[in-house]
Image (cartoon, rainbow, N blue to C red; front, side, top):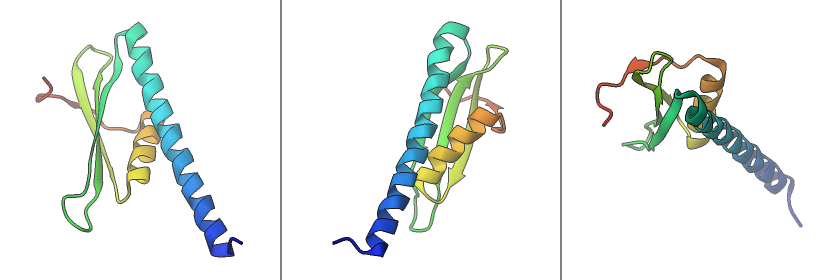
Amino acid sequence: MKTENDMKAETQEETARRKIVTALDHISGNMERLHYAGKGVTGLKVRGPEYEFGDYLCIINAIGDDGLRVVAFHNATSLKDCLSGAGHRLRNGTLKWYEDKYQD
């Protein structure tokens, strides 16, 4: 029989999975629109923490409205928060885009 703590942990894990799936769904939708519009997200990279208490980093590559290659960053203390935060910021337009001088 499951304890209350077990059920709470399962609920938290399900919530985390939903956040990640929602974020990835939004990012992939943006990437698919690129095919038709010639602009939008072209790539997503995730870097893990480099030390014990470090952050995760999402690196989002895109082609901007003006046709230039751009990059944006989002970091968070957990992978789920990093992915969901990047997805939310992409959707609501709060990512800060920089010219991508290093993209191949």
